[in-house]
Length: 214
Image (cartoon, rainbow, N blue to C red):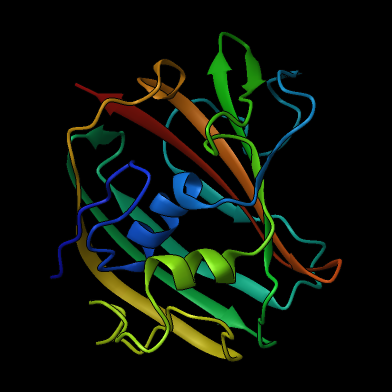
């Protein structure tokens, strides 16, 4: 198993794996924008992934997206901060992904029977990132060997990402004891992440999970 610290801080001092890079990119990117509306109350039951509590995921493209998440496992459930997080995943890409890769995140938190869309504050929350490739280059300078366990399993950490199948066997990551924003503490969350290039959607994934902070 490989370990990685996932600091929620402006920079990753040692971005050893992709989840670390992605976590840091929320704060490190200089291209994040604010989502509108900032606060939107949506009735629970508006989509199939509304059930409060428990980890779940699904592809949300129109069935024609070239990049598809085939499997994803996260434990424990709920996710504990601080704590250890075990992740396994498999992705199939039918098309190479090159810069600029735009990522749009919509993050919601359950409040009673409503889902409240969280605003983009300090590049964390429902934000838009104009180019994930640039974020990755800032975190892991080009020419640098990809960190473990990406290197072992042949998973790239820079654009362009070639078409093909990528698999991450169960790997352990450390979630450090950090001070989270008050609106990102204990609770049930769901995230919609869409990635596009030149207006063409390449991938769309929905996640639902619970956080438990000490």
